[in-house]
Length: 338
Image (cartoon, rainbow, N blue to C red):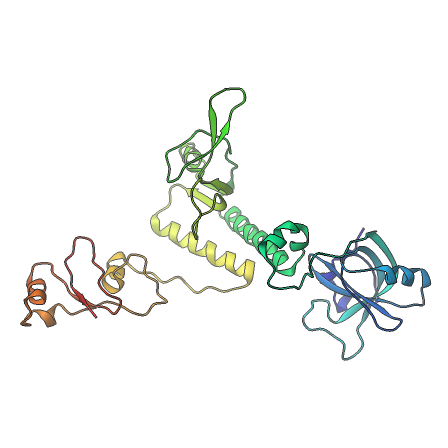
Protein backbone atom coordinates (compact mmCIF):
# COMPACT_ATOMS: atom_id res chain seq x y z
CA UNK A 1 0.00 0.00 0.00
CA UNK A 2 2.82 2.43 0.79
CA UNK A 3 5.84 3.45 -1.23
CA UNK A 4 7.79 5.14 1.58
CA UNK A 5 7.82 5.60 5.33
CA UNK A 6 7.13 9.13 6.60
CA UNK A 7 10.45 9.52 8.37
CA UNK A 8 12.40 8.39 5.29
CA UNK A 9 11.23 11.26 3.04
CA UNK A 10 13.83 13.90 2.18
CA UNK A 11 14.74 16.50 -0.43
CA UNK A 12 16.04 13.88 -2.89
CA UNK A 13 12.41 12.84 -3.52
CA UNK A 14 11.18 16.32 -4.50
CA UNK A 15 8.89 16.06 -7.52
CA UNK A 16 8.05 12.39 -6.99
CA UNK A 17 4.63 10.99 -6.13
CA UNK A 18 4.54 8.91 -2.96
CA UNK A 19 1.97 6.91 -1.04
CA UNK A 20 2.09 6.97 2.76
CA UNK A 21 0.20 5.02 5.42
CA UNK A 22 0.05 6.02 9.06
CA UNK A 23 -1.80 7.85 11.79
CA UNK A 24 -2.89 11.48 11.98
CA UNK A 25 -0.60 12.80 14.68
CA UNK A 26 -1.91 16.34 14.46
CA UNK A 27 -4.40 18.22 12.26
CA UNK A 28 -4.30 21.99 11.74
CA UNK A 29 -6.82 24.09 9.80
CA UNK A 30 -5.22 27.34 8.62
CA UNK A 31 -8.18 29.12 7.08
CA UNK A 32 -8.85 26.98 4.05
CA UNK A 33 -5.63 24.96 3.98
CA UNK A 34 -5.47 21.85 6.17
CA UNK A 35 -2.15 20.47 7.44
CA UNK A 36 -1.93 16.89 8.67
CA UNK A 37 1.17 15.55 10.42
CA UNK A 38 1.17 11.89 9.40
CA UNK A 39 3.04 9.51 11.71
CA UNK A 40 4.46 6.03 11.29
CA UNK A 41 7.24 4.11 13.03
CA UNK A 42 9.97 6.05 11.20
CA UNK A 43 8.74 9.55 12.04
CA UNK A 44 6.47 12.37 10.83
CA UNK A 45 5.67 13.94 7.46
CA UNK A 46 3.69 17.12 6.87
CA UNK A 47 0.79 16.75 4.43
CA UNK A 48 -0.82 19.83 2.84
CA UNK A 49 -4.46 19.57 1.76
CA UNK A 50 -5.58 22.36 -0.60
CA UNK A 51 -9.30 23.05 -1.34
CA UNK A 52 -8.61 22.74 -5.10
CA UNK A 53 -9.47 19.02 -4.87
CA UNK A 54 -12.94 19.20 -3.32
CA UNK A 55 -13.46 15.48 -2.63
CA UNK A 56 -10.05 15.06 -1.00
CA UNK A 57 -10.49 18.28 0.99
CA UNK A 58 -13.87 17.17 2.35
CA UNK A 59 -12.29 13.99 3.69
CA UNK A 60 -9.41 15.99 5.20
CA UNK A 61 -11.91 18.17 7.08
CA UNK A 62 -13.32 15.07 8.79
CA UNK A 63 -9.92 13.77 9.89
CA UNK A 64 -9.11 13.92 13.60
CA UNK A 65 -6.15 12.81 15.72
CA UNK A 66 -5.23 9.11 15.46
CA UNK A 67 -7.28 8.45 12.33
CA UNK A 68 -5.51 5.76 10.30
CA UNK A 69 -4.90 7.18 6.81
CA UNK A 70 -3.57 6.37 3.37
CA UNK A 71 -2.31 9.46 1.56
CA UNK A 72 -1.03 9.87 -1.98
CA UNK A 73 0.66 13.07 -3.02
CA UNK A 74 3.61 14.89 -4.52
CA UNK A 75 6.77 15.70 -2.58
CA UNK A 76 7.71 19.37 -2.68
CA UNK A 77 10.09 21.64 -0.80
CA UNK A 78 8.68 23.57 2.11
CA UNK A 79 8.44 27.35 1.66
CA UNK A 80 11.48 29.27 2.84
CA UNK A 81 11.45 29.84 6.59
CA UNK A 82 9.10 26.92 7.37
CA UNK A 83 11.60 24.05 7.48
CA UNK A 84 11.78 21.97 10.66
CA UNK A 85 15.29 20.90 11.62
CA UNK A 86 13.91 18.54 14.29
CA UNK A 87 12.34 16.23 11.67
CA UNK A 88 14.12 13.98 9.21
CA UNK A 89 11.50 15.10 6.66
CA UNK A 90 11.63 18.71 7.83
CA UNK A 91 12.76 20.12 4.47
CA UNK A 92 9.81 18.78 2.47
CA UNK A 93 6.04 18.40 2.59
CA UNK A 94 3.46 16.33 0.70
CA UNK A 95 0.90 18.07 -1.49
CA UNK A 96 -2.06 15.74 -1.01
CA UNK A 97 -3.76 14.39 -4.14
CA UNK A 98 -5.87 11.66 -2.54
CA UNK A 99 -6.68 10.66 1.03
CA UNK A 100 -8.40 7.53 2.32
CA UNK A 101 -9.53 6.93 5.89
CA UNK A 102 -8.54 3.34 6.57
CA UNK A 103 -9.96 3.48 10.07
CA UNK A 104 -11.46 6.37 12.07
CA UNK A 105 -10.68 6.83 15.74
CA UNK A 106 -12.58 7.93 18.80
CA UNK A 107 -10.99 10.67 20.88
CA UNK A 108 -7.79 9.21 22.43
CA UNK A 109 -7.79 8.87 26.25
CA UNK A 110 -4.66 11.04 26.36
CA UNK A 111 -2.44 13.01 24.00
CA UNK A 112 0.70 11.23 22.85
CA UNK A 113 2.91 14.11 24.00
CA UNK A 114 1.27 14.26 27.43
CA UNK A 115 3.70 13.83 30.30
CA UNK A 116 3.28 12.53 33.86
CA UNK A 117 0.87 9.78 32.86
CA UNK A 118 0.16 7.22 35.56
CA UNK A 119 1.18 3.65 34.90
CA UNK A 120 -2.42 2.47 35.34
CA UNK A 121 -3.62 4.79 32.56
CA UNK A 122 -0.77 3.76 30.26
CA UNK A 123 -1.34 0.02 30.77
CA UNK A 124 -5.12 0.33 30.47
CA UNK A 125 -4.63 1.93 27.06
CA UNK A 126 -1.47 0.05 26.10
CA UNK A 127 -2.05 0.36 22.33
CA UNK A 128 -2.11 4.16 22.60
CA UNK A 129 0.85 4.13 25.00
CA UNK A 130 2.95 2.16 22.51
CA UNK A 131 2.34 4.87 19.91
CA UNK A 132 4.19 7.43 22.04
CA UNK A 133 7.63 8.39 20.66
CA UNK A 134 9.38 7.30 23.84
CA UNK A 135 7.91 3.80 23.68
CA UNK A 136 8.54 3.52 19.95
CA UNK A 137 12.17 4.54 20.49
CA UNK A 138 12.54 1.99 23.31
CA UNK A 139 11.34 -0.88 21.13
CA UNK A 140 13.45 0.26 18.17
CA UNK A 141 16.52 0.47 20.43
CA UNK A 142 15.90 -3.06 21.69
CA UNK A 143 15.60 -4.28 18.10
CA UNK A 144 18.80 -2.50 17.02
CA UNK A 145 20.65 -3.90 20.03
CA UNK A 146 19.55 -7.48 19.31
CA UNK A 147 20.43 -7.04 15.63
CA UNK A 148 23.92 -5.79 16.54
CA UNK A 149 24.46 -8.77 18.88
CA UNK A 150 23.38 -11.25 16.23
CA UNK A 151 25.42 -9.65 13.46
CA UNK A 152 28.64 -9.57 15.51
CA UNK A 153 28.28 -13.10 16.88
CA UNK A 154 27.34 -14.53 13.48
CA UNK A 155 30.40 -12.87 11.92
CA UNK A 156 32.62 -14.40 14.61
CA UNK A 157 31.57 -18.01 14.11
CA UNK A 158 28.84 -18.33 16.77
CA UNK A 159 25.66 -20.21 15.89
CA UNK A 160 22.20 -19.41 17.27
CA UNK A 161 20.64 -22.48 18.89
CA UNK A 162 17.16 -22.33 20.42
CA UNK A 163 16.95 -24.33 23.65
CA UNK A 164 13.73 -25.81 25.17
CA UNK A 165 11.42 -23.76 27.37
CA UNK A 166 9.86 -26.80 29.09
CA UNK A 167 12.50 -28.78 30.95
CA UNK A 168 13.22 -30.50 34.25
CA UNK A 169 13.80 -28.59 37.43
CA UNK A 170 17.45 -27.88 38.19
CA UNK A 171 18.97 -26.58 41.43
CA UNK A 172 19.85 -22.95 40.77
CA UNK A 173 19.68 -19.64 42.56
CA UNK A 174 15.90 -19.18 42.69
CA UNK A 175 12.65 -21.13 42.66
CA UNK A 176 11.37 -22.48 39.35
CA UNK A 177 8.09 -21.69 37.66
CA UNK A 178 6.26 -25.00 37.22
CA UNK A 179 3.96 -26.10 34.38
CA UNK A 180 1.75 -29.15 35.08
CA UNK A 181 1.92 -31.99 32.57
CA UNK A 182 -1.40 -33.17 31.14
CA UNK A 183 -0.12 -36.54 29.92
CA UNK A 184 1.76 -37.27 33.16
CA UNK A 185 -0.63 -36.39 36.01
CA UNK A 186 1.09 -35.14 39.15
CA UNK A 187 4.30 -34.29 37.31
CA UNK A 188 5.53 -30.89 36.19
CA UNK A 189 7.80 -29.18 33.73
CA UNK A 190 9.97 -26.26 34.91
CA UNK A 191 10.60 -23.07 32.99
CA UNK A 192 14.38 -22.59 32.68
CA UNK A 193 16.21 -20.04 34.82
CA UNK A 194 18.93 -20.06 32.14
CA UNK A 195 20.03 -22.47 29.35
CA UNK A 196 22.95 -23.66 31.47
CA UNK A 197 22.64 -27.41 30.96
CA UNK A 198 21.74 -27.15 27.28
CA UNK A 199 24.67 -24.95 26.32
CA UNK A 200 27.05 -27.26 28.17
CA UNK A 201 25.64 -30.18 26.19
CA UNK A 202 26.28 -28.22 23.00
CA UNK A 203 29.91 -27.59 23.97
CA UNK A 204 30.54 -31.26 24.79
CA UNK A 205 28.87 -32.19 21.50
CA UNK A 206 31.39 -30.08 19.62
CA UNK A 207 29.39 -27.06 18.47
CA UNK A 208 32.25 -24.88 19.77
CA UNK A 209 30.53 -21.48 19.73
CA UNK A 210 26.89 -20.91 20.69
CA UNK A 211 24.72 -17.92 21.45
CA UNK A 212 21.05 -17.29 22.08
CA UNK A 213 18.91 -14.29 22.96
CA UNK A 214 16.71 -16.18 25.36
CA UNK A 215 14.00 -15.83 27.98
CA UNK A 216 14.79 -16.75 31.57
CA UNK A 217 12.26 -17.29 34.39
CA UNK A 218 12.89 -16.99 38.12
CA UNK A 219 10.23 -17.14 40.81
CA UNK A 220 11.66 -14.64 43.25
CA UNK A 221 10.76 -11.32 44.82
CA UNK A 222 11.21 -8.19 42.76
CA UNK A 223 14.44 -6.26 43.22
CA UNK A 224 16.23 -3.53 41.31
CA UNK A 225 17.95 -6.07 39.04
CA UNK A 226 15.45 -8.94 39.22
CA UNK A 227 12.07 -9.65 37.70
CA UNK A 228 10.14 -12.89 37.09
CA UNK A 229 10.83 -12.91 33.34
CA UNK A 230 13.80 -11.33 31.58
CA UNK A 231 15.85 -11.66 28.42
CA UNK A 232 19.58 -12.30 28.33
CA UNK A 233 22.23 -12.83 25.68
CA UNK A 234 23.61 -16.25 26.50
CA UNK A 235 27.04 -17.15 25.07
CA UNK A 236 29.18 -20.26 25.42
CA UNK A 237 32.46 -21.09 23.71
CA UNK A 238 35.21 -23.72 23.77
CA UNK A 239 38.94 -23.72 23.00
CA UNK A 240 39.55 -20.05 23.85
CA UNK A 241 41.87 -18.60 26.46
CA UNK A 242 40.70 -16.16 29.10
CA UNK A 243 42.42 -13.29 27.28
CA UNK A 244 40.79 -14.22 23.97
CA UNK A 245 37.32 -14.34 25.53
CA UNK A 246 37.86 -11.00 27.27
CA UNK A 247 39.02 -9.33 24.06
CA UNK A 248 36.12 -10.80 22.07
CA UNK A 249 33.49 -9.66 24.58
CA UNK A 250 35.02 -6.18 24.69
CA UNK A 251 34.77 -5.91 20.91
CA UNK A 252 31.19 -7.18 21.12
CA UNK A 253 30.11 -4.53 23.62
CA UNK A 254 31.87 -1.73 21.76
CA UNK A 255 30.27 -2.83 18.48
CA UNK A 256 26.77 -3.00 19.99
CA UNK A 257 27.05 0.50 21.50
CA UNK A 258 28.26 1.89 18.17
CA UNK A 259 25.57 0.26 16.04
CA UNK A 260 22.66 0.73 18.46
CA UNK A 261 23.21 4.27 19.79
CA UNK A 262 26.24 5.50 17.79
CA UNK A 263 28.53 5.75 20.84
CA UNK A 264 32.25 5.05 20.44
CA UNK A 265 33.46 3.43 23.65
CA UNK A 266 37.19 3.68 24.42
CA UNK A 267 39.26 0.61 25.14
CA UNK A 268 38.29 -0.96 28.45
CA UNK A 269 40.77 -0.37 31.29
CA UNK A 270 42.57 -3.44 32.61
CA UNK A 271 43.37 -3.98 36.26
CA UNK A 272 44.68 -7.03 38.09
CA UNK A 273 42.90 -8.39 41.14
CA UNK A 274 45.86 -7.45 43.33
CA UNK A 275 45.87 -3.85 42.09
CA UNK A 276 42.11 -3.50 42.56
CA UNK A 277 42.27 -4.76 46.14
CA UNK A 278 45.31 -2.61 46.92
CA UNK A 279 43.82 0.61 45.54
CA UNK A 280 40.11 0.20 46.26
CA UNK A 281 39.62 -2.72 48.63
CA UNK A 282 37.18 -4.33 46.19
CA UNK A 283 37.52 -6.70 43.24
CA UNK A 284 34.84 -4.71 41.36
CA UNK A 285 35.71 -1.06 42.02
CA UNK A 286 33.57 1.78 40.72
CA UNK A 287 36.13 3.90 38.87
CA UNK A 288 33.74 6.89 38.93
CA UNK A 289 34.58 7.15 42.65
CA UNK A 290 38.04 8.68 42.88
CA UNK A 291 38.64 7.82 46.54
CA UNK A 292 41.38 5.24 46.91
CA UNK A 293 43.01 3.51 49.85
CA UNK A 294 46.29 4.99 51.05
CA UNK A 295 48.64 2.62 52.88
CA UNK A 296 50.09 4.16 56.06
CA UNK A 297 51.57 1.03 57.70
CA UNK A 298 55.13 2.41 57.95
CA UNK A 299 53.94 5.70 59.44
CA UNK A 300 52.22 3.96 62.36
CA UNK A 301 54.98 1.52 63.34
CA UNK A 302 56.50 3.87 65.92
CA UNK A 303 53.38 5.63 67.27
CA UNK A 304 52.61 5.50 70.98
CA UNK A 305 49.05 4.31 70.42
CA UNK A 306 49.52 0.54 70.75
CA UNK A 307 46.30 -0.41 68.94
CA UNK A 308 47.76 1.03 65.74
CA UNK A 309 51.39 0.14 66.42
CA UNK A 310 50.66 -3.54 67.14
CA UNK A 311 48.90 -3.96 63.78
CA UNK A 312 51.58 -2.06 61.87
CA UNK A 313 54.36 -4.17 63.36
CA UNK A 314 52.63 -7.55 63.08
CA UNK A 315 53.50 -9.92 60.27
CA UNK A 316 51.27 -9.24 57.29
CA UNK A 317 49.61 -6.32 59.07
CA UNK A 318 48.54 -3.41 56.88
CA UNK A 319 46.85 -0.10 57.62
CA UNK A 320 44.99 2.15 55.23
CA UNK A 321 43.34 5.54 55.39
CA UNK A 322 40.03 5.98 53.70
CA UNK A 323 37.24 8.53 54.06
CA UNK A 324 34.35 6.12 53.79
CA UNK A 325 35.18 4.12 56.90
CA UNK A 326 36.60 0.62 57.50
CA UNK A 327 36.54 -2.13 54.92
CA UNK A 328 38.44 -5.32 55.72
CA UNK A 329 40.16 -7.52 53.18
CA UNK A 330 39.38 -11.17 53.65
CA UNK A 331 42.05 -12.78 55.87
CA UNK A 332 43.67 -9.43 56.60
CA UNK A 333 43.84 -7.33 59.75
CA UNK A 334 43.52 -3.64 59.05
CA UNK A 335 42.59 -0.48 60.90
CA UNK A 336 41.03 2.30 58.86
CA UNK A 337 40.76 5.83 60.13
CA UNK A 338 38.91 8.87 58.87
